[in-house]
Length: 307
Image (cartoon, rainbow, N blue to C red; front, side, top):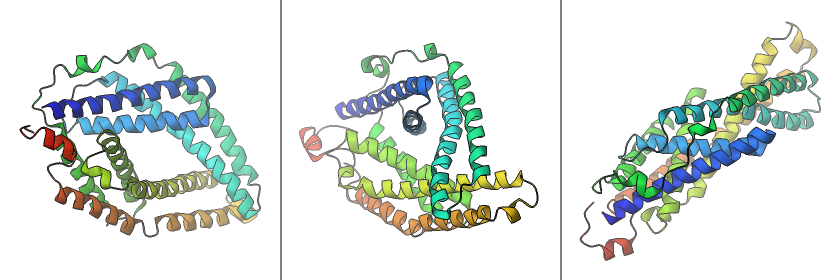
């Protein structure tokens, strides 16, 4: 039971940290629209969303109510649109150098869109009532109603196994962009969950697993996603132009070819690399299913503990 309480406290503290990070970067974004602040705010939200998904599978008290979570998701969506555009502007600068073209029309279009999206995020932030985000109660207060018999450890592992099953299925069907987008979300959530377990249970079996490999896979899929979003934006932009636009501006068609080529390169070997990481995790499960989150010292000092 003592171990259950420690596990419950760990997930509480992780969520509390992400909420505080969200608030901090939210305030910086509100004041300056800083690109890095927007990015870090979204990272914190992604971790909060992952824990909220985990909560659906475990018995754990709620410290974010539905209205608060809805506000967080709205900010995530609106800030995501601006973040995507900022990444596209960075990518375009690189393409300008590679293809020796100023891409004047597209650059102007992105600048105008940036003004619109910045104003939209400003409006969303100004309409967010920070009083709906009260101070987080002390752990003892939030965890007081939680039964000691709740097995957070096994429930977390069960959730993790379901996540692995989803990813296993996705890596066999990467023939469509929508499946790659799904894989990106699942891999990102898997990384956040493993990172949480690794940080809060450093002496457990999970410490034998190298998080760096999954992080690298996630970053490659993220790079693919950036190009895919750029390509969608580019095609929408071209569709708005006069019918002879590509004949007079052939560099845009070459840009389309280049992005397609980059997308293929980022996905090259991704299924094999991901499969190998999932196989390693399964080996850890099979070799140490009972003590996956418990260190040997913890088990030895509590030989009579019940899960």
